[in-house]
Length: 211
Length: 211
DNA sequence: TCGTAAATCTAATGTACGTTCGAAACATGT
DNA sequence: ACATGTTTCGAACGTACATTAGATTTACGA
Image (cartoon, rainbow over all chains, first blue to last red; front, side, top):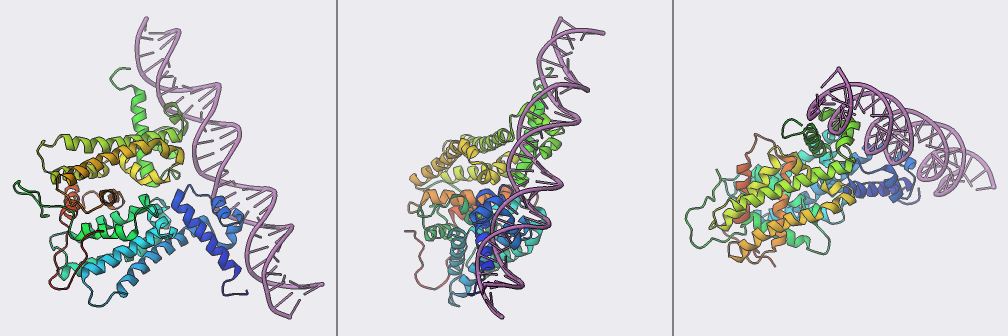
């Protein structure tokens, strides 16, 4: 062990990177260990020196992915001046979530894309972690609403789902270089806070309030 | 052939239903023909009387799913009075999309969920169809913007992606009986048109416009 | 240079799956 | 009742895969 990183650690990281990338691209079931091994520069059998099974590898990828986005959003809040507006708090959270998802992080995007199609057993092990992340967003939105920055007549749970959906779906269409992450975040926040509608000239009553 | 439906047609439909349901739940690669056959009340080998391969079955499920949502949204526009406001046009489109996705339609939700993880070959055969559906939305939104119902300083392509994301993601969390489809559509439209922000009392300049 | 532990390779094993095909069961018109 | 076409069965085949285990190579301290 010469440097800080043992050879084992390096191989582990290469395997995880390869796994995250392939899982993200092809999904869980369609990804073979042969593929992962090749991308990591070794033979399939060698993977078992580092991981007990394909599922174990999967679980670690999922775990890293969720941890990264959770930490990113959490840190975005801590970095903010204590007296920041709630709009700003939400804005940086949106940006942190998007940045993690789209900026070279196959782990988080793999988690987002394949979680629904992973063995039930594996899902169970990660529900707690997902709930924790949802709770983080719930807190951010609730505080904003309580302090008057968000309308009171909306179902915040629903808003959170729609918001997460808009953000998460970006893994399906985002292409680096086309639109900046900043621009996506700006549009998202504009929609969330102000909407993009313009009062239409005439016409009578419209139903803008929600039950 | 006694009635309008031959026995073959009935079996075909049962197989497709079973396939759509299973594909949607487990994804493409993780779904076995044995599973589909059992759900359709027959043996795996019998499927080949009706379909040439697993991929062919998959393609038909994808095709039906996309066609249904396309037709639903298209009809929602045609059913509308000719002088309807653009907000109403968008509102019924949102509702039609959501209703197709969430109301017992495993075909459309299967398409949405698994398209990204399907063999490239199969994807290619359906890109045209997907583009056509995107074009339908593009038209609806562009007309609204041109006639002054939507802000001009937004990237409509981006808005469409965020909107579709928010809607499509519902297949990941929606549970019948919890929240009505109508309520989801209302919240979505409120966000889209008005936003849910409230002007915060004091504080200086905020950046609401988009590059 | 040698010895030991770490890391990887290679070949083999078992299994699950997509697919094929001839036989059996079923339906229908005569 | 028979004959013919339709639909399903059931067993078999080949393949691709996750996993295992022993042999081999590599790294490194003594």
